[in-house]
Image 1 (tube, rainbow, N blue to C red):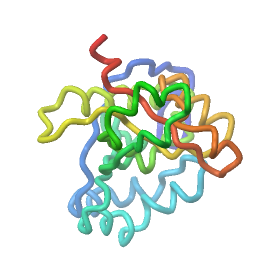
Image 2 (image 1 turned 180 degrees about the vertical axis):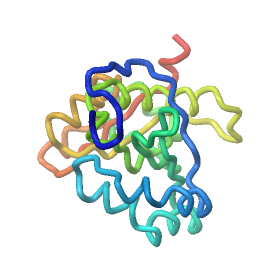
Image 3 (image 1 turned 45 degrees about the vertical axis):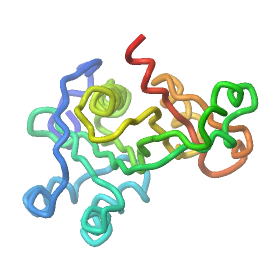
Length: 190
C-alpha cells in the first residue's frame, strides 16, 4: 500500500471522483492532507501547499482551484480560469475553419496534478472527463468552445493530453518548456 493507504494494484478507470472547490475554509480544514500532497513535479506541489498563492489566486479572481477526492482520499487538484484562443494562433491546417472569429472562448487549465500514488491508475483521465463534462453541461453564464492547457513539454505529459483528445494549437512552441494544447468541447455532443 502507498502512503495514502490505497492498494497500488487496483484500477481506477472511470472512477467517480468528487471535485471540491478550494476555499480558505477547505484549505484550512484539509491542511494536513495538502501538506502531504506529492505529484512528482515540485512547482505543482509548491503551488497547492502555498496558502498565499493558492488562496490568493482565488481572492484575486485569477483562478479557481479544485481538490479531487476518491472518497476521503485526496488524489489530485486542478485550477481553472477564463481564457481565449486566438484564431491566428491555430495551426495553418485548422485556420480556415477558425477564421470566422478572431477569438474563441476557452477555459484554461492552469494546473493539473495527480498524486504519485494514484498515477497511471485512471484518475487523471477520470478527472479530465469530469472537467470536460463540468464545462460542457453545467449551466454556465457564458459559452465555452475550448479547453486549453499550457502542458509541460515532456513526453509523458503530452501523451496524457493526447490520450484525452487534446491537440496542439501550434507547432511554434514545440521547443519551449510548455506546449499549448486544446480540446474542442463540441466533441462531447457528437
